[in-house]
Length: 312
Ligand SMILES: N[C@@H](CC=O)C(=O)O
Image (cartoon, rainbow, N blue to C red; front, side, top):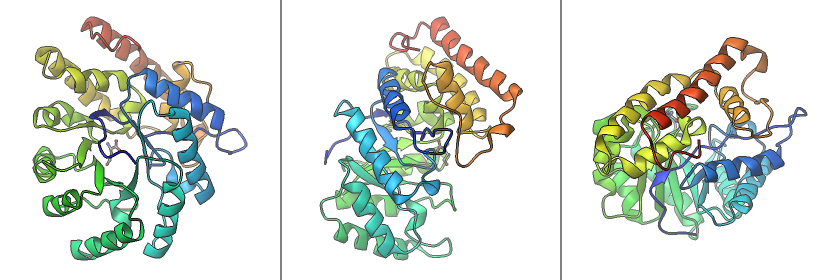
């Protein structure tokens, strides 16, 4: 497994389904190519956006394997997928999914302790998992479901200093906490990618590593431009950040159906079926919003002459 992950943009991948509710692996291959064409620096497969809680273990492992094969070394791939409550079962899930060639297995922070349990319980469970899988490198994801467990800077430091953690999808949505975690990870292999787009520019200015969030499924090239150019073109970077921050409103609107529709507008051959959302709730007006966001992304890139974002 790779010991040093690249900075930049790590989309949280969707899972395409056929009308018969099977994983659509051909569409998944096309999706991987699309993310790479848009400039993604890495891929986070089998995450909440992939509807991991609604995939069987066989599907979680197969999706991870297919994404690794499809990316074919062009960019690294991390994946999660330990959804059980019992640590013993999670250890088995981690084993199955880690065998697929991923660069790191991403631990969902809320799986390692119940909501009422403290960080000592979390740390003990992390030690068990690390000991059971000595050859696996890990990531961390402060996933909002079934409850959100944000790591303290102290626990982040502990993870970072084990040398076994390479990736964190940071979900606090709080710049002060982000900065504390960046400080905690300094000088270690742990890279911190934030999940909440209102803070991308300030996170990069504070020494952050990039973005790994939902909106990279709608406007990946704008995040790629921002994470690559925030210091070279600071005035444009502020305008791009303003637009991306406002785009945050799309996160909670019929996602991931909305994002699959966006990808259809991009020419990707995938259906809108999701296991966690009812298609009939995605109305004509929601489609219009996504069509307008699609055009607005292009307009912003053209107006600001964002070189490097012209694959839009
Ligand atoms: N904005 C986040 C939500 C996490 O809490 C994401 O992109 O996943």
